[in-house]
Length: 170
View 1 (spheres, rainbow, N blue to C red):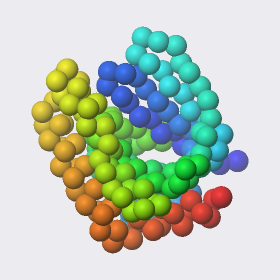
View 2 (view 1 turned 90 degrees about the vertical axis):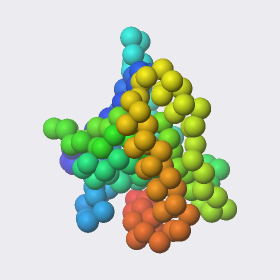
View 3 (view 1 turned 180 degrees about the horizontal axis):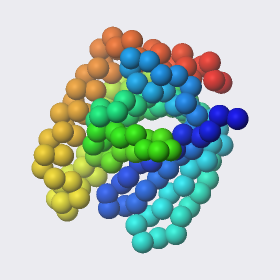
């Protein structure tokens, strides 16, 4: 049996969310992970009790060490979307990967090709409450704008590759 790869997402100051996933590919674009419907997750709010569950949709993730974003190809009930979690540079851990979320999420809606950057209010609040430094805020804005433009252009080979890998797993 292939051991699970733990992907840990840290939300400051909210808590920690982890997913147990499976590595399906690695190439020049990074490490590709897959989460099947039902793949376990756990959310532990800061100072609270953990909540657990399973993914309600299949997903493929793309990470690369030191890159300030994580790609999520999501097979949602109302249509597919490619969402980018802007973050501090990702890091490997003994059991998988970890990253600190910087709130902004460029999203491409595959049904109509619309691209938007989500979660500006959360981003503004994190800066105002100093859960994010100004340099981290600059990184988040710059990365969100650059990745949103990549999604709009649709030219990067890994964009299609994520859907191909997800389709192969379904």
